[in-house]
Amino acid sequence: MAPLIALVAGTALARLAGLAGVAALDGWHPALRVGLALMFVVTGVAHFAPAYRADMIAMVPPRLPRPDLLVTVTGALELVGAVGLLVPATARWTAAGLALLMLAMFPANVSAVRRGLTLAGRPATPLGPRTAEQILFVGVAVAISFGA
Image (cartoon, rainbow, N blue to C red; front, side, top):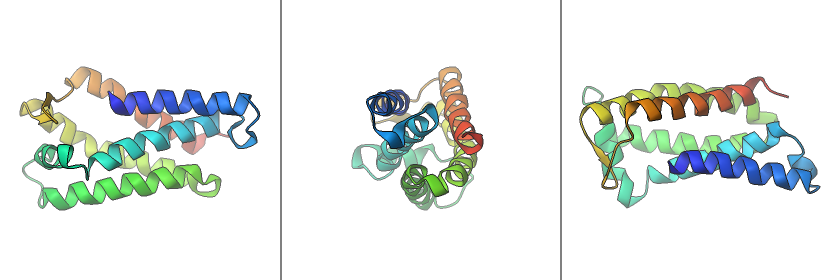
């Protein structure tokens, strides 16, 4: 839920700043970039936070090697991607790469639900709502990739 809140709140606040006269945020496209960047900061930091890291490592499907390294690499990619979204010259390509990254990581979410895992003591988000969130997140990244 925190990533969704970060996306929506970040986008709304950035859009309001644009309407208030911040030229760099004047429009939905830059506001979406800020919202998605904030979402990736939240999820990227979680890959390294002690309260979440062990659970994220456990989410990696068992057939994949070095789940600890995969969590580290994906967390780093999310944080670098958040920065890339904020740079207009790199935002489109970064958004496309992050969309692919989200698709590649989605099986870990499916695996977590199927194995009844928790994240910071809470059950994994059920697959229906998690899939809907994922479609939204990927859709925003695609919109940024192809947008104005």
